Image: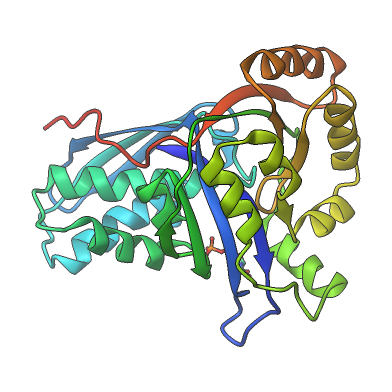
Length: 296
Ligand code: C5P
């Protein structure tokens, strides 16, 4: 299940429901968590997680993938449904790349197949939206505009592939904390107009044009909370990246590169500079949640 970047993240003022209205452009990138589902004892939903940073992720009912399985079981009123989920994590935990949402999306898809439920993709995305704002996009993948909380999606034409270098931080950032800081810094919110220039750049496939129109209204708040993000951004730009964006609410920073060679060079340089916990080269867009394995 893929991680996401927000190529545009336009954030309006805090609404009464506790969320911020968004106009966002998502792109799924080639960094995946792998979720395996085995039939479990009737009524038992369990999860194990492996990979960096998973020690502190709860494996009880507060785990988003567990909640995804429970949501389906409850809606199908079948207390015999059981599943053992195992998650192999590569998407950084609390990294602004929707890792938890990707796992929930995978759990929805896997359980719907394992339990032989009659659900179409649109319905699955509606269940996803109940779990978190980014879950519907993790199911859809590709490149898409999100409005509402980011859960109402329309696919966007995107030609070719873009080469990104991701710089992972050695700290996490909590999404509500970043939104809270955004409210203090910019209580009136940003404008929610459709980012047409960015959408046009995606249609042409021109990375240099795309680089000119990347936007993230949460970046200032994320950098204000963790000023070392600016050092990472500056390092990548000095080493030839076309542009840098904080991914979602951070702290992962994504650098857009002109081609594969440039991305390879940047990942090597950044890797040796020690400005990030880790560096990873990815391409986007890639497809959404895909069924690879399902064992009874
Ligand atoms: O939907 P999700 O559970 O991912 O959101 C986590 C938190 O991020 C919310 O509780 C809210 O504080 C904040 N958020 C927001 N506006 C959005 C999406 C998330 O304020 N559009």
